[in-house]
Image (tube, rainbow, N blue to C red; front, side, top):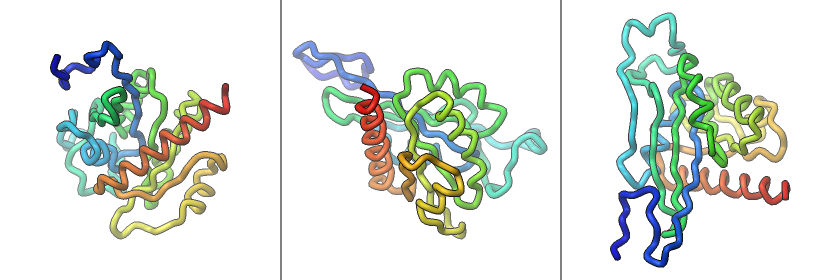
Length: 199
C-alpha cells in the first residue's frame, strides 16, 4: 500500500495514525509571519493575501511598513513532516487589528505559538503575547531581523516586553530555513517542558 501524502488523516500501512500537531505564527502587521510559513513549509503554502488599497488608509496602521503592498486577510498555512508518524501544521494569523476576531478559531487545538517581534515596533506584539498568556498557550518570542532596525539582545527584548523568565526569546531571520527550524524546535521544547511540569 503506497503512502498517500495528500491525505492529512492518512494512516501508515501498519494502521498507526499520523499525529498532527498545530502551531501558530502570530505577531503584528508586517512582522514576517507569511515569510516564516513560506520559508519552512515543505509544501507551497496556502496564502490569503490581498493588495493593500486606498480604502485601508486610516484603518490599518502602516507605520514602519510603509512599503508593504499586501496583507494576510485570513491565514497562512504550511506543513512540515517530522517523521512518518508526526506532521506539523503551521497557521499564520492575520496581523491587522480588524482581523483579530479570527484568532480564537485559529488557536483552537494549537499546542503552541511563535510570536514574531520587530525591534523597531515591539509594541505591535503585545496583543499576541496577551492573547496566548490569557489562554495559557505556550509561546516563544522570535525577534525577526530587519535591516536598519535597532539591534537588541534577547534579555533586552524580554525586559521591554515584561516577559516571565521561562518564556524563550530568540533572535531569528525568517528568510532562512535553518533559523525558522531552530525557532520551532525551541517552541516544541518549551511546550514539552510546560506539559511535563503540569503532570
